[in-house]
Image (cartoon, rainbow, N blue to C red; front, side):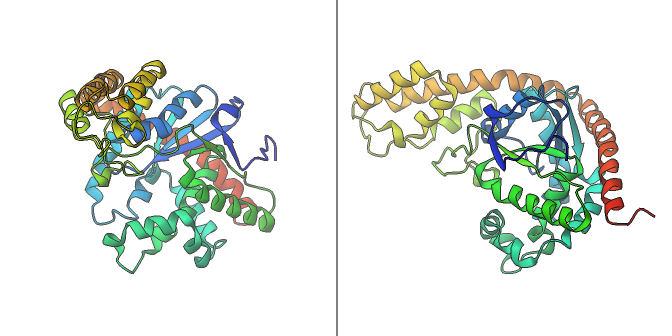
Length: 349
């Protein structure tokens, strides 16, 4: 296949620009986006949008796999996701935003691919196993067919848009490998048709929560959102976990176990971070002063994002127009892929 890439995964800094290649990435619409998304994926997308044909999916169908009883939440979150994407600097003139449910070709490919994957293989997927364990309050002991099979739907997303590259975090690598397996199985049975995607690894894999949890999450109540106002930022940072061993202001601290210092490394310049670290270890910097400085650094980053987001909040029709136009454009590519797949499967009646 032309433009074939042999790597299974590649670092973002090693990706060579090529406007003839496609990138597919996206988000489940289950709420507003937080700084974990910003450092984990959005910054990479901004960097890549000038280098490739980029498709960004709002995965509403996938969101319903564990929000099937709350469709209103999913629908309302669709525009929230795109407002955040636009606010950070993703350009609808450079990327194609689309809604998963508006591309029926994805659903059809999902059905075809489901014949190529066993239940046992889906149950062994590390990402799926972890997520099922986290969602026992939703599923109990009975996981739905839709949730167990969502890696098959993801494979349909990726191949539908002939994506060479898929930006992901470390925890998502098993899903890309599952997609590659499906592609190999399809090509071995029906002939060389589909492209094996390559995972693009961002510099920041996963951002910790304000409470020190290894994951920042919407459902965990430990997130700083891109749309948080200054008062909210102050409230959250002032309650962030610090070194529990520091009782008095002049106690020597350990910045390596302090979430405030952790976030300084994301939002504050390196020279000042070094100074913060040294002062903390020497007992010359109090936690309150350190938090106040972090509030300023965070707000400096988020203020222009908030301001740009307000424009889209006041112009919701423009947001939906971007999504509808993008979905229409995305279907052109999706139809070509489905035609190719059906021809290989002898379903081109």
